[in-house]
Image (cartoon, rainbow over all chains, first blue to last red; front, side, top):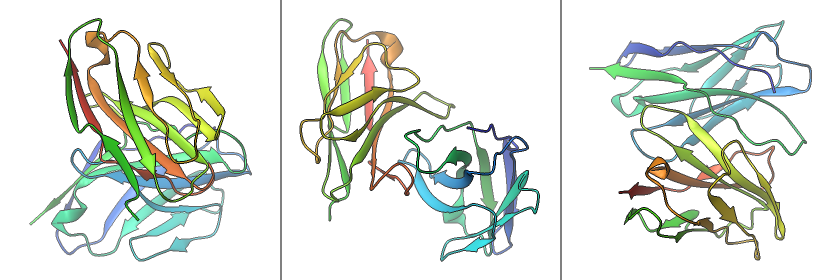
Length: 111
Length: 112
């Protein structure tokens, strides 16, 4: 699976949009982009995933560039409860490969 | 649904002791996995299973055994605990490896 690069930390003001970047320049055509987050010491929580089209759900939006070499996770109105470590993961669908977590981005939402 | 449950929540072991961390899910998921997370680090995969009777090694399998006799349960056995196994252990399950994974609350293990 392709490697991902994320900034180690980011700050965001409460109520503003949080934009978390992820670089995956070696992504191949059958690899999906997944986002998970881990709040404090809880188990990770799935957020969203996509292949090439932009995706939106009740938690976030995922914007994937046309060349698929990078993506951005957008939390439209960040709250203090969104403070967490966010992991961007690239993996092949329909193959027995597990999720591989990197170090992620620590997002701090500030009041 | 209870989701993914893990027991115990906390455990202290002495070096050389053995124990089993329990993981159960009630969502009829085929895929289950065990991760460990050391302080300030991301999660590392220990073992995983794609269905009852089938298990495979992850990134850091040494010192751990697993088995999968039922769809619901996926216990992780520490054969002879070492201080290097002090960590937080997370179990996860999903319908298949392609779908979103649901994680348990974790077991915090300290080996002295």
